[in-house]
Each structure stands twice: as structure tokens, then as C-alpha cells.
Length: 188
Ligand SMILES: Cc1cc2nc3c(=O)[nH]c(=O)nc-3n(C[C@H](O)[C@H](O)[C@H](O)COP(=O)(O)O)c2cc1C
Image (cartoon, rainbow, N blue to C red; front, side):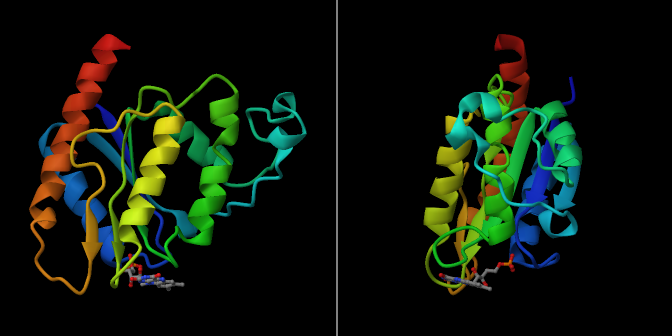
């Protein structure tokens, strides 16, 4: 079995630091036999969530009533065995496009926990502060949506400290995602 792992760059900078960290994880995943797909959120039109769930859970349907590029992304996520989202710290949180993306996943959660059992990891970076908050936030959200979190799932990079030991862990994380995806496939 070759697990299918999706890599999502949440930074508006296509070839920035987040990109590099995601690519290192992808290398580890490929070495372990994964099929991968990489995309940049900035290339997609992702409108904000309309908050239908708050009116009534039945109003939050899948497919989502908002028509935009999320339709394509949902299909990829549903096929994936693993999801890796990289994000910079924008004021101790994620960039706006990534927040829109997360809110728009509510319909997957509300209509049968459709992300349940997928492996999730979240590398993050910042100039000096906020990366840990971003990583832990993303892990909390996706675990709440049913995802499984592997060892070393939130590597955080403070760009003022060059050459951190965590850089060595990125390929290991890629390997762990694939191994865990194989185990999860047998159990779930
Ligand atoms: C709008 C905005 C807000 C930011 N807020 C923070 C912050 O609160 N703390 C921090 O250390 N760096 C902050 N940064 C810097 C980025 O997190 C940092 O440069 C990161 O490495 C960029 O990642 P990228 O190369 O993938 O785009 C901010 C940058 C932008 C553009």
C-alpha cells in the first residue's frame, strides 16, 4: 500500500520558509513510499464560511453551499490518507486564507466526520514568536476533526535561531506519517 499524503502551503509566499519545511517532510514521506500532492492555498479562491452550522447543524451541508475552489480541495482531502499543513505565524495565528480554509472544513466534520482517521501534521515558522501557538492550534483543530497525530507532528522554526535540531526531524516526521497511515488503514 502506498499512502496518499497531501501537502498544503498556508503561506502566501509560494517559495518561502514554510514551503521548504513542507518539502523536507515530503522527501521523508516519499522515501517511505508515499504518493504525494503539493498545493499552495494562495492559488485557490477560498471564500469565508457563512456560519450555517450556527443556525442549525442541518444547514451545514456537504457539499458546502458556498461555491468556489474548495470543491476541488474537498475531493483531494477525502482521498488522502495524510494531510500536512504548513503555516507561518501571522500575529500568533494562521494567515487569513488558511483560516477560511479551516472554517470551510466544518461541513466535513458535521456530515459524518469525513476526516476521521487521516494522519495530520503541522510545521510552522515565525521570525521570533507565535509559531508554537500556530502548530498547537492546527493540531487541536484537526485532532478535533478526527485526525491522528504522529510523533514530532509540530516542528516549529524560529528563524532567528539558525540550524535547530528540529530541521533533522522533518524527514523523520514524513516517514512517521506514512508508517502511521499504513497502520491506521489496517485498523480503521
Ligand atoms: C502579516 C504578518 C504577521 C506576522 N506576524 C509575526 C509574529 O507575530 N511573530 C513573528 O515572529 N513573526 C511574524 N511574522 C513573520 C513570519 O511569521 C515569518 O517571516 C515566516 O518565516 C514567514 O514564513 P514564509 O516564508 O513561509 O512566508 C509575520 C509576517 C507577516 C507578513
